[in-house]
Image (cartoon, rainbow, N blue to C red):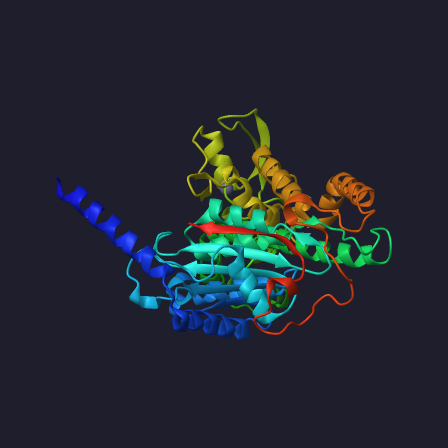
Length: 474
Ligand SMILES: [Zn+2]
């Protein structure tokens, strides 16, 4: 027998022993798990994410704080516990292999619900090195009334997209579990007063997801553009400190405006978190460069130039002074505004020196560069048409994607399916106990009060209707 095979056989024997141990009575140790779940319930008295300090390695503290806020502001009450698997095992840390949990599957999440006693969505992430060691995710929605959320589907998506990264898994779960599966419930006719409240909840959840997606997009843009802007702000700051002092009132006033504009750009860049900030910064930089051109004209006794588009090849060159024909490698010839130096290069048949972003010229930067270009070409300095189609294509796809994630756009897209669901609900609600397939019913009993408290350890007969749930080891 080869050594590797011998090791595998030994492992199998140990596993069998482990399983046998788990089935033997161990009342005192099971009580430990129950006591622990009582503690977790106290930590989750309010909706949010709670990470056991013994599972702190699983999620960074900043990430945990973000997720906590996302869960706390989700449209449904969401309580999410991130706990070490060994604390759910009656054998605790004594068991070395093949972990067995006292509660597993949806029941684990339902146990937490029993202890907190408030309707809503419950999720438990069991932290371990492998599925064999008890690593898993289980969740459930128990609600007497209100909409049904996609809890089971949210867990599947979380595992499929992100396992075993706990933070991204929870992020995806919150996002998906904020979507309403069945927006209607039995006790209130959908077209009566309650419908407005339900629509409000759904609206809130949709807005949250859209905001999260957009924030992720904007962070990516910032990663690309911020180094470029930092470089440009430093370059301009250096330049304005060398502006000569003057007794001419007009020139002194202009000099002060330039200093203020660059300072504003620097400040805005420091705080930059979104596309709006990027657009403001380039708009201010474009304005500062135009004012420098005006100052130079005054110093040389020339008339102040009118505002023009930035030099197409590199906005750092300042306002354009003329136009030239230019043919991109993959497109038709067009007229582009250029500075004196670039005009001279084009006239001499040399390739223009284009501002670089990533692997190519900045106008090939796609969505990452949309805000950067918009600020220069549609900012306080003026508004001009950017002469490369790549930008308008990227801007179109980015803005329509953000727009399509806004609730209003989704509402119209979904209205057909919602009215179909409503029709089915009305058609099958005659006996008051119609099922909704997977999610196990619209709810039963009274509809008074959205949340109700329960005593600790309430049995399953006292649970509110289970709406949706699921989970697995991973
Ligand atoms: Zn130029």
